[in-house]
Length: 331
Image (cartoon, rainbow, N blue to C red; front, side, top):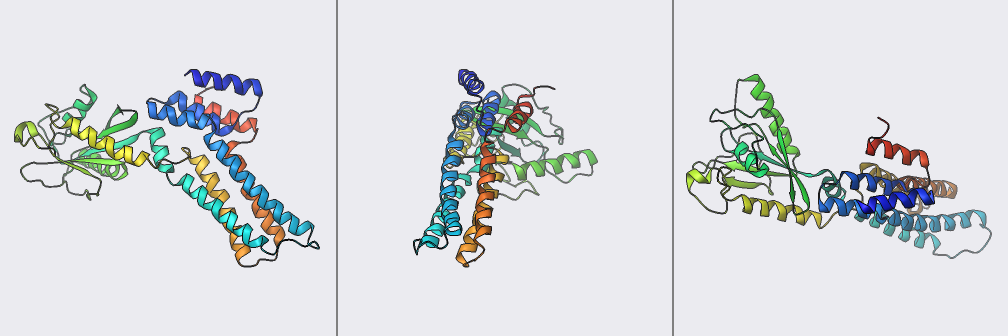
């Protein structure tokens, strides 16, 4: 946390507080794993801010070209000015799209990836969750339908924040409360970043209502009873196969993190998308030989305003808003 203290000291001394960096500070204070800390430090260190400055400079240069064509229309300007103008903006938009391509992964890293454990009742989901937690966090019983709500356990998997979710056993039931739990289980399973699907080793029947996805980890449950002992088996009672399961989970998320985005906050992403929208308008105008050059210039100005809001250029009110909402101050 020394980095956070030094950042805050410099910010207050220089009276120059970047909104995106402030969000990075908030992320650092709430980070629980090494990878979350590193992502927060990158944001605090100005990785996004510097990229926005680079984009801002490109837009400003293009705006100057358009302004020159307005203010000095009687002068001889290069014949290919509009062609160069369109090419530069297309390259800029592609760069922004690349920066946003891994936004969901970056946001999930900040908040933690969710892994849902799904299956029929009494298949060993709660026992597996308890083993992962290292303590009894879920009630286990031979009576089917014991779990009726979603139980969460957070795990630091070599720096990757993982939240394992124990969900209600999926089956047809006339019990209203259990039915609500099953609906919630199906919703959570659908929304999860990854699912561990436990199946009966004798029948290998998949839980009804769950559409199997290509990245689902499907395991034979209760290997302590079935004695299968293969890499596709697991036992929450003995821990058999758990290390292999965690290795699979780590590999899948490490692969996703290889394409992590530059933005980790929805506010940042939406503003960059707004900027891109204005740039797309400009490109369309230029490609269709739009004669109202003043409107083209206005779209460029609007794109710059959206981009400036990402870093909140010296807007102390916006910065204070983030500070109070992120750091739970003044409540």
